[in-house]
Length: 90
Image (cartoon, rainbow, N blue to C red; front, top):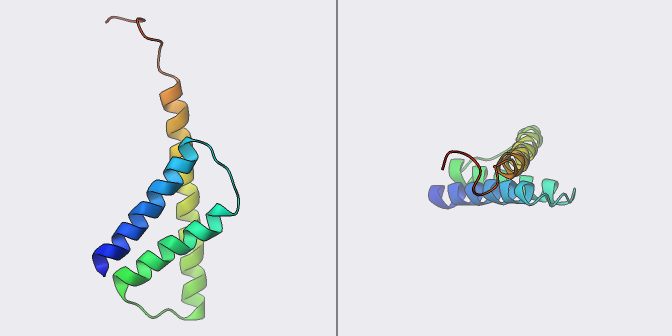
């Protein structure tokens, strides 16, 4: 179960990074993806969450989704700034 929880978290992070890379900004995806990270964390830790723990964990997962989206968005801009083929030393 720990491995499956980690894979769910990794897949959610990869999805958010990919959506940032292609700049598919749909604000309904962020709250749903945060549940994926939170569900993966619950599977990894096998923890019982209270209501306050659930809300704080959800907000941390939401923040992580925004960070991974931002990383993908930044990669889009960094890779777009490559020089054209045939330009430079090579």
